[in-house]
Amino acid sequence: MDPVITASVPLLEPPGWAVAQRELFDLLDHAWRQFDRDFTGPDGRLTYRGRLSTRDGVDDFYETFFNWPQLYLLGGADDLLAAAERHWAGVTRQLTELGMLHDEYERGYDWFHQSESMLLFYFLCLAAPDRWAERAVRFAELYVDPACGNYDPEHRIIRRPHNGSDPRRAGLFDGETYPWLPREAQQYGFPLDWVLPPHAGDPPLDRDPRLGEEMRRRMGVGDTAVNLAATSLVRNALLLTGETRYRNWIAEYVGAWRERAAANRGILPDNVAPDGTVGGLLEGRWYGGHYGWSWPHGWYAIGPAATAAALAAAAATGDDSLLDLVRPALEEIIAYGKVMPFAEADSSLRSKWTVQLDEDVHTPTLHVPFRYADRGWFDYNPMPMSVPTALWHHSAASADRERIERLRAASGYDWRTVRAFRIKEEAGHEEPWFAFLAGDNPDYPERILAAAQAQVRHRLARMERHRDHDVAEADIHLWQQSNPVVTEALVQLTWGGPQVIYNGGLQQARVRYYDAAARRPGLPPAVAALVSSIDPRATTVDLINLDPRTARSVIVQAGAFAEHTVRTVRHTGCADPSWIGDLYDYGHGQPRVISTSTLVNGPWLRVELPRSTRIRLTLRIDPHTRTPSYRTPFDPR
Image 1 (cartoon, rainbow, N blue to C red):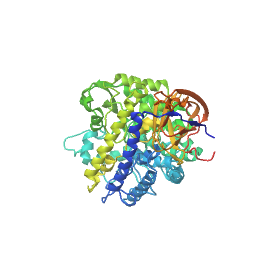
Image 2 (image 1 turned 90 degrees about the vertical axis):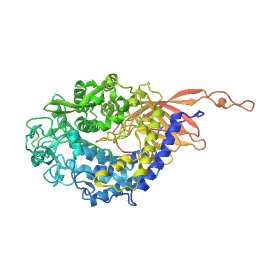
Image 3 (image 1 turned 180 degrees about the vertical axis):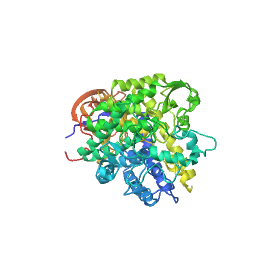
């Protein structure tokens, strides 16, 4: 029986963050329903009459809805989960008809994009594990079972960069040349520049069949670092089933990459030839693989994939030293950092940083190199904080926190600044959130909730402008750009976690919640939550029932997957009701708040919230002491 605590401190003046949080839930409920009406068909598919002429596109269809079940898990409407499931099913049928899927899974594409496609699926598995378990196991077996053609257990590699459900899909593209988009070719350059140096009279590289052939031969086979994101697919099956074979596969595959990194001064290489040798097809280069260090994104692709894999391996084995798959490369790019204004950097991701930095594009700040080639490190950008934050959130290690403090000290802009931007990852506010957790950004909750409101309202206006647009293949990003669901603020404030790593990750959270009365995940109606400290020794959670009529019951869970143990909880209470006053006065007294400690020794505790009450919980947590899984407090024990 889980411990039960009853709140008794009266709610007299609702804090602004609590009111704003519930207003955001209400606005999001309107927004997703409007998108559903304007952009999708009766069976859940997106309104699209075109074809898909390249291997690209699957991710853009699924990404549109990636955070809808996440919002349900946070406490969104009861029918939001059914809507998200309907959209996954409708889009899956749609993409199958377009020739992009086989047996409900991507025929073959890189894991930079597959990882984006899978976020919706992972959140559906977390929200309704029983309904999605069969698919989760079937998809994971594509990689764990060597007979499916993706995994080579002898060399511990995924056999090719484009992988999936169709082992006949070889190479990186169909036809003789890579399907270059002129803007992207100009933005990222071309791979294998050392193979085909420019000569007078040669055709442009984007139309040169020799480049296509060299890419097919040198980059179209063997393993590549972004394939590490496939570990989340297998971890998802492990969380659902607990089967040892999934744990062993993660340990084996990540372990092989860790050995390769250790042999390369700790820096993760990006390519492995079919015979298991690093650089075997690139004349010994540890860089130059598909979606690797040289092209097109470098750290922007490798960092998230490696971090997702390191977190999967650490969670599966209990060995946090596996985070060293990522740390040395992270320290390497920091060591090569330079202070400059972004306006002077050679960044290939200008559109991303221009909106995040706003006027600070002219402020000198630390930039780190994202890419490496024969000429050395290049493509300087501000440090994205998703990877350092994810490492620290998992480990709670002083070294991982100290790294973040160093990055803050080297930053030329104020980390307390909150801007109402929205990027593809629906993230990017790690800096002001960290400042809040550090105790020097107290207004962050209200400001990030206001920024979230601004983004929802912006997307509602965008939806109105484009709802009658006949989407062409070149415009399929319109849907994800218009998706009005925003969750980063709610994830940080209520779960005490960073937004999910977009390219490959599963959710991190210090706590999650269940509505005890409705027997479903998420905060109950009218309940607001704020995590103001994620220190395992003193994780601080405020719960407020704003409803003046109805009591609510909340189950607090330690960890995204009940992987932590709450040893004790210290909680506030009201000593006596005399603050109300008696028959002969108006009651000007203040409630006298006391603190009491309760033993828990488990992953769950129940908090009863009578109408208009609040409570502060200070949890002493032993992290990573229980087997992570998708079990819920309602399952038989």
